Image 1 (spheres, one colour):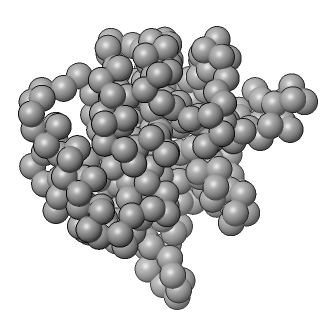
Image 2 (cartoon, one colour):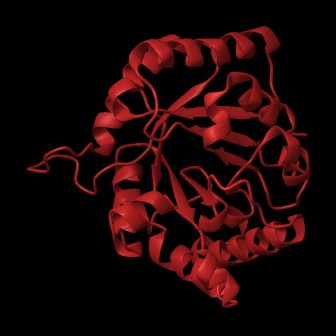
Image 3 (tube, helix red, strand yellow):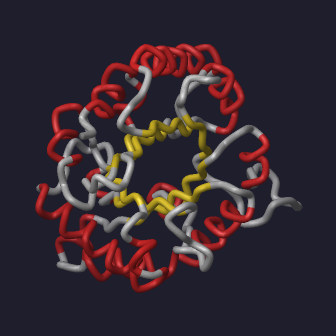
Length: 254
């Protein structure tokens, strides 16, 4: 992890949480932040859209940030059931996840769709967290680098910069399985991602873009992952629903 890039620890709650438990979980993390005071990391919570407001109230003035898990490519319109980036911003979100593998798979989202959503997030003043990652079949076929490089090229918005972009690498086969690539493999992919971003937005900006690792991040492996040169934080799924585990992951940041 670079000393010039501030670590970012993101909790993706996915489709979990009702109002009462959301307030309890977010409140517990807010108390930990307040007790510690100054931190060496940024921490972001991305709950389901139905409880963004409740979580926002629970973390007010704690130093925790708020984000959404997805947004539509349009800011308004006849899109029943969808949430726009401007709606997220209206709820005091500062970030929006786009292109998570579960969206790419379950909703057939292409790189072009992800790019349009990322552009919408930037237009609404959000930082876009663009997710990329290969399937087990693609990895076994030796296609990891090509697949991920293609997703980067096809998914990053034209106006991306170090100030409005975060990229999260999540090998699909590692999400929720307890499996993770070895550290050398994680670093190799992250280094390639940074080089690809450099080709798209310039070397100086790319050097400051925060690259997150996601996929079965736990307190037991966080220290090793956070020590890698091009890993600047984590996109955490299951472990973020336990405030002690999620806090322990954040504490692993240098």
